[in-house]
Length: 493
Image (cartoon, rainbow, N blue to C red; front, top):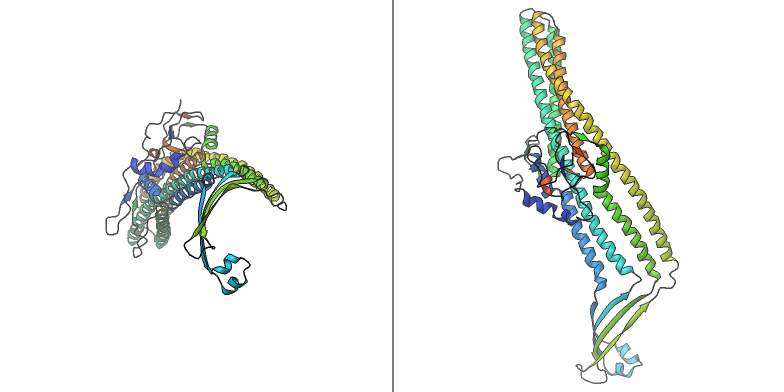
């Protein structure tokens, strides 16, 4: 088994570049164009379109930009703050006549301009902690971006597999409808020849009607799955277009590649190391701890350096343009000695939030382990069932042929033919559903471990200590099954 690694604490930037790299690594997949032939998308095309157009992924990218702005805002405390203040006024008659200042009594008009510069020198550690919190929030957005990608790709695979399964079920049900239609015609011929009863004709027609109803429901399910995929790919369905005429077609093979030798404990170790949601929780813990220091700093002294230069009208002179220039340089200190226990209450609240985050982290770790176990169990069960289901379909096909021959020779009844036909449809449906369960379980395991599986060769063992290549979008499955990644090292035997 070969695979590409998910994000780690030492490789955060790949999350930001994932979509860009994917666009450079593969040819762009054009969306449907009205008036042009309907495109046919492989699974690779669907995943590529999801990276380019999925609303959840695009929103996660914007959240990365938002947290970059938070870092800039937090770092603003490291730089001097420059402000320009100006005022010009015309005094009221009452103010002019009642003032106790001789200069004010002489002139009604006044103006002043002030340029001030301030710099925070000491904030009790609050500035440093806020910068660290902003950086942690940015890292969290990067990991959340990866989690969004994992979830979106999993949903796209689910939708694509559902479309393929519905199409295969429609094909199997149409074959059954064709068999029952021929059987109705054959029973009518036998009735005309006096070799059967009208009951057999009615019985066959009832089964045919039931099968047609099932076929219609499956066709509705196909439309629903196509609409769901178009939503994930952010492809607008033309307003005047029939729901039975999708803007794109999907061609995906349920090849169900063999898994080989896998140990569930190794996957759990990989999931605990790679799951981006766990990385987000770790940073939330760090943020909560630093927020306690920020709130504790509220009762510590804050010191600022400032310098100001002011030009104001000289009110000792008659000329409006004469001015006086003053400047001031100094230190400004504030100390909130007693705030009514507001800071103490906030610290208590912060510590409670920190404890809650620890509980959430432990619950999430358990959830991740259970997701891996559940997906692994489904994958193993589906793998063990596929072979028997395939053999069962061949047996059901042979049974239908023998039943039809036996009716002519008198060794079987119409009921036997109808039952064999229904059994064949059930066998084909179960085979298709088992393949879907296999591929869905593989998609769930990929998301649970945050891996992009590329190949599942037999007789390979994956261990938690396997060397892993840097994550690259080249690990996205290819047009049919899954192309090999750029150059990931093979897992040890």
